Length: 313
Image: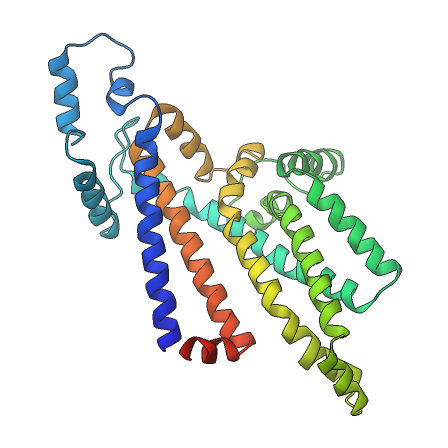
């Protein structure tokens, strides 16, 4: 429990610092909200002052941040300057698509990346070389190019999957988001596969594995108890880092496949200086990173109890 409490406290501090940076980042960019609201028209200083007072833009920065954070914790993410719509309502209909896409891509990363890396690490030879070549190719292909390639081959030419829209219902959405999820996960699968291969190969030839074999322990038991489990710590770290970055990368894929995720309103909000939307999306990203990192820390304890004992010491 002490380890868990420390990790939660550390996550809370990181979330607080990250939310502060995300909130203040918009104010460093050129332009201002009142300039967007007047749409380039010439207005009197009194009108600008009224706008700034209406949106509390004259309050000290720390006061604005404290008010925003308090409202966000209660579920109030503010109002969009562009369309006068509540930000929570604006994102509520789009967030499920982004979450579904990132979870789908995360499953692909874990299954394909760890699976291929494990096979390559345990089976040197042509299979290992094939996985290495494929991982190099997958890492070199940008996400947007992979999206266009998948759309052209599997979507347009072969007609196996839809190339736009997010579908309705679980199975239809699963079919619509297969190509976007593969495009999003492809570079991460390549990296995780290579890290898994290296970790498995090192543990397979380690002293404790050789000692277990010399004592007559069957190879399958050596692989399961000594090789795979000990190699999962670096694999978990790499997988967690790449899964945490999926939401940010999902915005590019959403644009390519015309998905109704939160990527489109974020791009529009940045262009229009719509503070409330940008800050809300930034907060969602920060929370997602924090939760995933916390889950990775908890997995460390499950994989290797010495992590908890070391933290207690």
